[in-house]
Amino acid sequence: MPMVPSWKFPSFFVVLFTFLSYSFSSIFTISNNCPYTIWPGTLSGSGSPPLPTTGFRLDPGQMIKLTSVPGWSGRIWARTGCTFDATGIGKCQTGDCGGRLECDGNGAAPPTSLFEITLGKGNEQDFYDVSMVDGYNLPLLVQPRGVYGTGVCNATGCVTDINRGCPKELQVVGGDAYQGGVVGCKSACEAFGSDQYCCSGEFANPSTCQPSYYSTLFKQACPKAYSYAFDDATSTFICKAFEYDIVFCPNSNRAKKPNGSFSPPLPPSIGWPDQKVQQQVHSSSDILLPFPVTFFLFVATLSVLAAKSQKLI
Image (cartoon, rainbow, N blue to C red; front, side, top):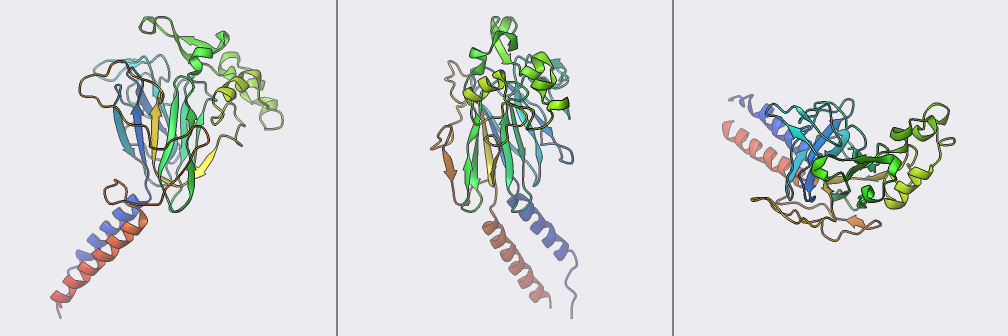
């Protein structure tokens, strides 16, 4: 009786592993709806691999999709007012990450609006938030899409332009390109450095670190976002989604778009700030394959291999 070639079974498991891995991965779709260029950055948490890029340019109207791995944890933000040379060395007025185009493990210099997320492995839930604990530089909206199962996911973010109403003592003023305008709004911790504002020292717990006058201003402007370190109750969201749309300047009407760019549409049926999104898993043309499709492909692959094995016997 002829032996079944041994290479068939390892190949089968490689295919199976690929399908299963992608079925539980998530995609971050980052869009620039601002009327000017931004330079998004990404930072992976401890134990998480870097995303396909850790820093890049995004002109008005452009978007990019970054695929993560199950269990990925980290931050995504946007830098403004950047200049880089041909080697990727330079600096940004807000959100700078070590003076390089690719952040390569460097975090964002405050003040910066941050999207933070920890993806669940397998069927585990995702935890995500938008934080202004490190201050604010740009409005952003985060919309989960492709919700796993029959759960619901909340949009979150900060769509208000806080720079326009930032107290003078917290303002970061831009250079000539911004005509001396406010490009960022510091947190009280960054501006004053006291333990009370930074929730450190004797204030390093929820009972002693309470909302301050400044964090309350941030919270009133953006009720769904973190305004200080222990602002968990109204700022952390839990769900299971296959894609997260991250839109910078979601309410901006761009006056001029560069040639070849396009306007990324805002997610359909979006509400703010209390809109919930509920979607059944579905995909025939989606980049991600939900589990029912993956299982079907697994069964189909197994059937084909079994049929081939029968012919060789």
